[in-house]
Image (cartoon, rainbow, N blue to C red; front, side):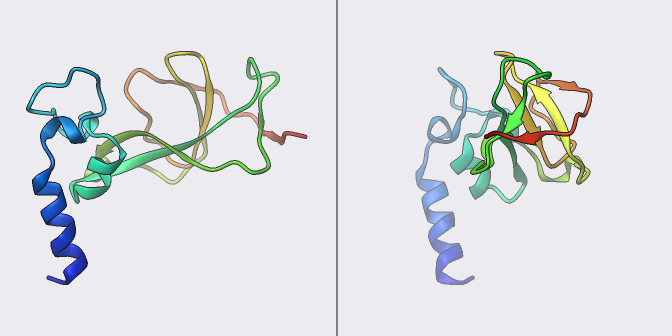
Length: 121
């Protein structure tokens, strides 16, 4: 094992379950990858991050993608989930639009029909 891998394992083992948990008030036993935050998801080889770009606009008729858009961590899922490489649009629980580059979406997010997105001016 190289030094970086050893250090990653040491850091992971030194964190408590709540240090890695994404939810508020988590208990000592996160339930799989879905309970992990970005750092915990990245550290666990059994998990993979779900990344998406937040869209600008109040509804799908107005959505555009910022020209300087960067993907953000929105959830964690099992690495063997079988996500397809495909563009997907979805609404989060606050009705914010997001663009995904895979078919895996966070729990309770709603996929919406695909539309071509303009770049915001």
